[in-house]
Image (cartoon, rainbow over all chains, first blue to last red; front, side, top):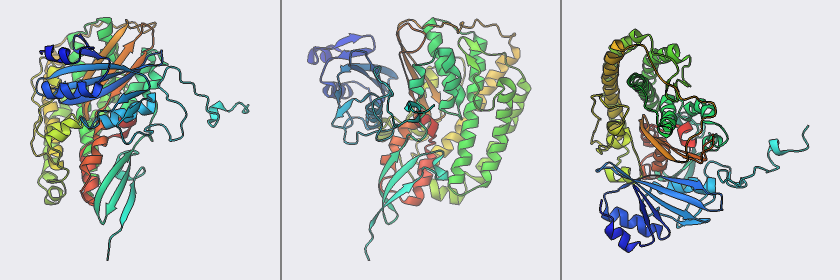
Length: 144
Length: 363
């Protein structure tokens, strides 16, 4: 696929095989990609916690007609742009990532706990997560 | 007289939610104004556990992600490890895996047919499908020692050679006539048609936008079946079932036809296995198994849509990050849209037709 136009507009991106690494303007990037390339499905968003307080988000896109995958990767710190207005499936993915990694997606209206209880402390899939909530039985030091 | 809006909790203990799905419905009369799925009642922390366990310790666990189609998730994890270690599995192992996966797909679809009809109020098909599913589960038990949590695939091959092929022969000789029987009592049944035809219309654009995959997508007329690009299925002759009805009835019909297609694949696998030599495989030693640094990705066409596994390894014996994608998770998300404007009595039929299973959603 011809990525010249893409590289011209988003000049801070890096192409590596079927993976595009962008630094900013994620919403614009996704919008541009679906408008100009045949990618029409967002299969999933993968979040990976880097140990330096940043999180890598990998947007796994797919073209149903061309049977081609595309990965768009962005490293964020605490918050990211939401793409729920482009892909409805992102509603589910972003909420899962909020629940497990604590990434705040700006523009997502229903960002709340998904798997974990409402009053759960911390975000379990972060590498610096410590389970020390004293309300839980296994953290109770008084027990013999 | 005026009608007031009512908030109704459907589940999590409702029998038609197939596990523990809670739907928070807002009703005006019997019309659904909005639907808010609430999940997480079955969350076991599959992804967190992966980061604490070595690959071989994690392998028996992945069957539990979807307890009705455990083979598919074992296959994904095995595929990740095999591709990372650069191991090419022998042809016979591939065919054994295809045989098991397709039998598993039939068992899963059979249970869905029974459960779906039960949702609609027809109790007798449930007993018929369990009779046929039992044949498949008995065979799995003979080979793997387990009825549901098989733990049969292992890195580089399978735990033991395939046996009792005459049982599979019996299953595929009996099954087509049994499916004919189901079709006789279900497919053209006027009550069934009235409850499913034109109910829960899922347009192709909506389906793709919601990342719906598998049978639900194909019943909306979109041709996407990742078995066609799958290395494992190379050499097998089969076609995907594409229907363009877009409604609950089409999703039912597509699953029935897919079972027939799976029988076709099993026949081809049987022909190969009957002529094959005893299994010779080179397993990957699981003790101290470390994957080279990098990202690994594997996907497979599971009964409830595309399932995939992503692993990032930092060269240690445990994954740095492991993520599962499951088809049902996105189907639950779709309920917010597809139930809007429908009547409450159709909600059960529509949600049932999407084949949602909760362990897969909650992971």
